[in-house]
Structures are given as C-alpha cells and as structure tokens.
Amino acid sequence: MVKNRKEIAGKGIPASRVAALIAQALDAKDPERWEIVCELHRAGSRSVLDHAVGLCGGRTTNERCLGADLLGQLGVPKRVFADECVSTLLAMLRTEKSPSVLNSVAVALGHQGDGRAVLPLARLKTHKSKRVRQGVAFGLLGHEHPAAIRSLLFLMDDQDAGVRNWATFGIARQVDADSKHIRAHLWRRLCDRNAEVRGEALMGLAIRRDPRVASCICRELNQKTVSPYTLNAAAELGDPCLFESLKRSDARGNVTTGIWMELKVALRACQPQRESVRGAGSE
Figure 1: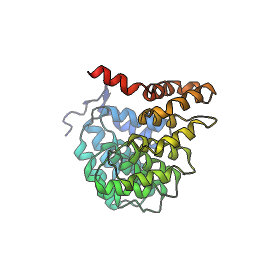
Figure 2: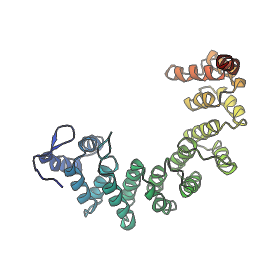
Figure 3: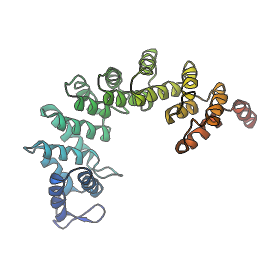
Figure 4: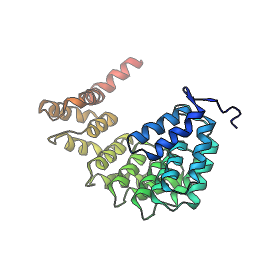
C-alpha cells in the first residue's frame, strides 16, 4: 500500500499528479489519450495501480476502458503488480457487457501474457461484436495452449478482415505449433481477399518450412510490387530455387527502396551455395 502520499512514481511522476493525469486521459481523445496512458504505464506505481483498479469498476465505459488499458502494460518495460492486474482483468471478463470494454480487457490480457486468460478469452471467440473477437485474437497471441490454438484457427475464418489478420498472425508467427490442420488453415488464407492476411499466411508456411510454398513465393515475386511479407517469407524458407526470381524481381524494379534490406536478406538466405559454404565452415 502507499504509505507516503508524496511517493515518487516510476520515472519522476509524483503520486499527487497521477489523479490529474487520469482525469486528463478520461477527457482526451487519441492520440493524446494514449500518450497519457503510456506515461502512466511507465510510472508503474501503486498509486497508478489503485486508480486503475478503481476505474475498472467505474460506471462509464470510458472509465472501465481506461482502467483496463492501464493494467495491460503497467510498469513497462519492467512489468509490476502482474497478479493484481491479471486478477482484476479476469474478473471484468466475467461481468462486462460493453464490447469496447471487453476489447480493452482482452488486449490488456494479451499484453500480460498470463495463461489464466486463455480459457475465458476462448469462450468469447463467437461474440457478436467484431471488436471483441479482434481483442480475443490479440489476447491469445503467443499461447501454445490447445484452446488458444483452436480459437485462433477458428478466428482465421472470421468474416472481419481485422480479426482474420490478428488470428493468422498469431498462428503464423507467434506459436511453434505445427500440424496438417494448421497448415491447411494457412493455405486457405493464401486466397484471402486481404493482402495482409495473405502475407501472414505466406510467412506462417515459410516458417514451417512447407516446401509447397516456394511456388507461391515465386508467384508473388512476379507481381508488379513485391510486399515485404514475400521477401521475409523467402528469407525464412531459404530455398535456392527462389534466388533467380529474387534477382529478376530486383532487376525489374518491383522491390521498393523502403524494403531493400529485406531483399538483401532474402538473397543471402536463398543463395544456391549457402548450404555448401555452411558445411565447409563446420568441418
């Protein structure tokens, strides 16, 4: 508990100022609101925690959203009061009805990364609000629990592109799980109408070293504009059969200046002599 009202919070924020900052955040719009929230995150004091917990029980959705947003990353980069934060957020999941608040709670739990959140979040994967489903997808990132994997696979087929994007990213790059079932879901998303979802699926298959994805990467390298997803997938797969396609794509000017480094990494990874050079060096 706070024993001294003049306690200094985090990076030089007096505890007496915490209430003023929270009042400002409640009245502010983005991006100013998030600037204040980030300042309170860095403070990471008991005073901020107590105010945030109080907000989570507030009458308005604005108050409860702010409370959850504060608890998600309290103390960054070094998290503090993790158990109190997660316990409060889990209690909110059991009673909260507002989609906007549920989104904030789910995202906050995602930042906390506590395994206790997996099952409560998974139960919300069919919520009628896309904001809630998107929050669930984010909240389950990085969890290898079977319920988290099943839920993300389910959300990869969501009608909302934002939900599909987070869920596909979660399966593609945030877990090590691999199976025919997972790869089938990733293959299906290669035909998604959203470019980011297609890119995440391409990355997921390349990370899993699925040899069939090489032809898909070659096809993407022949597009008028090559995406960073394609180059990163080529680098992950490291298949020498992609080397000439990468060079041709560069020669045609299909790779923009902003992702030149990704091209360089992909070319290095796909050099035909890469394996022999590595083998010679290990002898």
